[in-house]
Image (cartoon, rainbow, N blue to C red; front, side, top):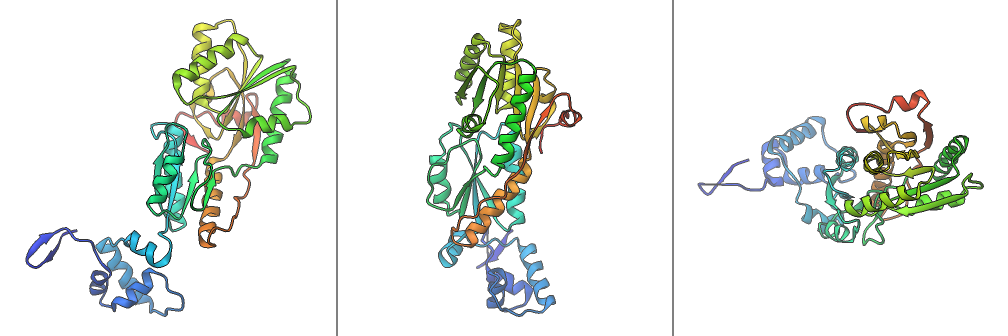
Length: 327
């Protein structure tokens, strides 16, 4: 918006006084309305004039000033991986919508190397009230309220893993290799009362694509009967290696999937551990907003269920769609 002052054209920040002047109300009344001061009485038509003026002038509060006065900026931070990745792009888009529903702006920081410490410091320097760290990263400690997006029900995840292990046992698998991006999966496997495997191996997936391909080739060389993976792009990479370099090796693949898309049409995938990312985002951001409102009191997200869906079930076919999307 272009405002005129002292006879010269200049781009100026819209102030509360500008809003008050256009709404034809007192400056103090506009301030109380915007800051939602408790106990303020206001006629509906007055509220409407202020809202119309804010919308017309595109007024935005000065974040730093609000932080100094009220101790919060109504801004949350989100740490995700490379936004060229479909999953992270969809995750960020859904997170923006959820944050806006809760009355927060969202500042996104990209972490490409798997170490979120720099991203955390950058978000905190921008006065965010709290941070959500996407589940792929280990956030360590942070100087403000923070949640790792891990609102999935561990009990239902354990049951889903057990169901998938029984499925593999029914298909005469005696060895398995797990490919993971965080440490909770080996913990779940080790907590099972019984596993049907004579041999099981857990590997941490490197972030570098070349290192990841090297790891996958080594696993193919060992030829486990089954492979459990937490990343669909890893499964795609594995499928290419199998087709080109190990055409006589056909392991049964179980995939952790919190999304749907055409990638699930891959015939090597025999089942998915499926859960809802959208519900997890909602629960995580709601919990963080509550933590901010209660000055950091920890309120964990409600757990989101997980289930095992074998390829033979009709529910699996419903996940195979042309356009990638979160579920």
